[in-house]
Image 1 (cartoon, rainbow, N blue to C red):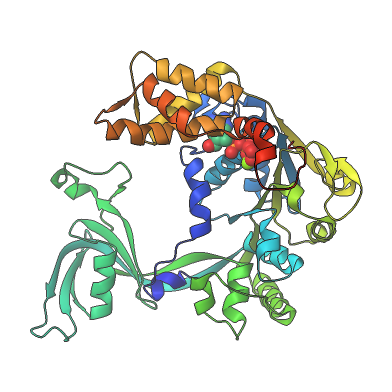
Image 2 (tube, helix red, strand yellow):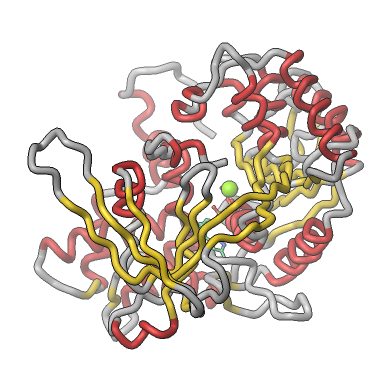
Length: 458
Ligand SMILES: Nc1ncnc2c1ncn2[C@@H]1O[C@H](COP(=O)(O)OP(=O)(O)OP(=O)(O)O)[C@@H](O)[C@H]1O
Ligand SMILES: [Mg+2]
């Protein structure tokens, strides 16, 4: 049920972009077949125990037998907690819902905290709906589009599809042409068209035509030309999240809300109805539920009400698997005077498995920096001086700061019309941008001449 495609609207989750960028080099947990962590694989370096632990958890999720379990990634800043959660998400596969929020987001939405949490939890529970549908599946032999004489007329055209056994010509309406153009379908593609919705899916490029393309991108899948009839009945499985269903069914909001991302509060009757319907479908064998993953980063930002709500929600038979992450030690639980480890109430902490993350060695830091360099298409000078300096910065200041310097030094080097980053480029940006530790030290020195409360800066 890809609603955005049906309406031809592209949606982009703007708030997520930034975070995705920082971890875009992470392609998985980097484990081998036996679940051992490889020293460096899929963009992941070191932190072997934590990755192995996450791998076991991943296995549990994939087996689909657990619901309502949680793990907590706990460790100093910049030790790869968010990275590990993203790696786990990458290994989940497309069907399993994964939703990520940051603890403080719950407070910044225009809805109650518990509503925000409920929505987040329901975004992480998938409903797999099985449907039999009629499809047309074949290899594209030719697409021909006739441009209308006037600008306003609808486009029409023809498309020839074949299987190894037959070939048929179809007339194309303007909607279909629009979709073919958008999906960039051309001769040699093997496609599947859902007859009910008209939705086109590219299955891959045909083997027989692969010789025609000398610049196939690495993610092009080669498939064989289908055999038999062009029209088939097929069981298709859609995965939607409970939250998607809530939104579509809450009459006041309807489809449009999905595009804006602004769903507002959803009435509890709507949720009850959906739950009811899903349980009927399950009894009739039409649907399955699957627990996805909700990742709550910076979990110490939640307050006591959120924690008690989560505690209860995790007991429910339909609960997602929750991953928490925090860099706090013993601290006050928000909304109380009480202290507790990681700022999480002990009753919730008790039912959570904790995966500690440890600071990286110099060697690991330098490898992460190299990987980030590749990710950002940056060339470091061969003498490794730039990398060594960045490693030193990562060790003494922070890994994140070192990473930011890669980007800024790259901009500077390019301005100097140089294609590699050398140590002087790093030194230059180092003199322009301060890291937080240095900034705090400076603040300490100049506090008296700045405007503000005269408090000690920690
Ligand atoms: N083991 C690793 N392999 C590759 N890249 C890593 C690894 N650990 C961390 N990184 C990268 O280093 C940066 C900082 O790590 P990350 O954001 O995961 O730290 P964190 O533990 O979540 O810190 P914080 O407590 O401040 O949120 C990110 O860009 C991340 O992708
Ligand atoms: Mg983090």
